[in-house]
Image 1: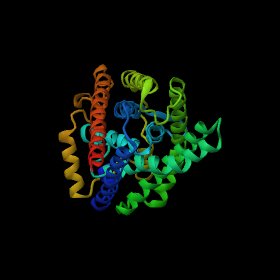
Image 2 (image 1 turned 90 degrees about the vertical axis):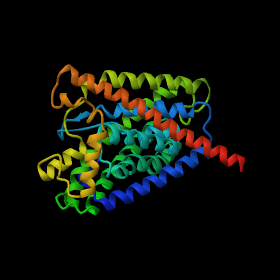
Image 3 (image 1 turned 45 degrees about the vertical axis):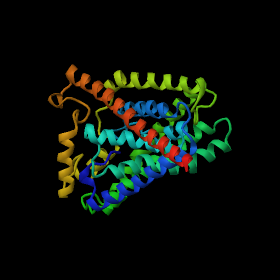
Image 4 (image 1 turned 135 degrees about the vertical axis):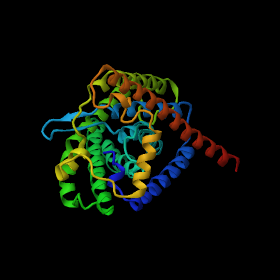
Length: 332
């Protein structure tokens, strides 16, 4: 669901970046008010690294001929709380755009909103939490499933709406929405199953996986998440589906190509900037593009390792911002 610069007008991109930035500022303040605890910042970093790696593993959607990947916004909300989760998913998407050219810089605000805001601040509090509370035994699984489907369907609707507002006449709203919504239904179901499975695993190693911050339980969670991040980055990423993702597939159904042409000067400039600053574009060495040599697999693993480190660094930065904000408030 990573939108490119070509899908977004400068006006829509600017507005959505302002919305996402405001949500980030608010989240830093809320995390500071809630308290960080002993292991909250490391938990944000390691969970972010795990989700970064998981996003690299596209799984096939056989009927559609498309593929999907874990997004992780709801999972992070269950584990960290919605505000810390939003800062973590923001870190992941920012690292992907800036250093790996995955998702446009002009569209970054849209991507943060579509994959982060809607999961953390809509699907989690309005669907997951009530369902979890209502159904004691099956609440976590059912809540994860329903909230994940809702988050991705809302994200798909947001993509089509943002494209409409950007004036991309090549992608008529009705046709684009009719392609996006159905293909993201099975992807949402997959997201829910993965989320429920990982939460169940973490619940077994800690009696309080949700919001775990201190004590041996959170340290065990850190160890498990770190192991999952390493295994996913080193092993599972090599077997990712090469089929177009849900967004690319939907664009292809309408225009006969997975990409559309860039029309804005700002979008072109930002795309050029991305090509300069992304040291491992599209998660691989430039000279191994469109090849299946062992070097391409090495490039993928190296990219994921670098992305995990950068994600941890950025989430730590947000964590320390929240910590300093809390310190200033206590002084007052």
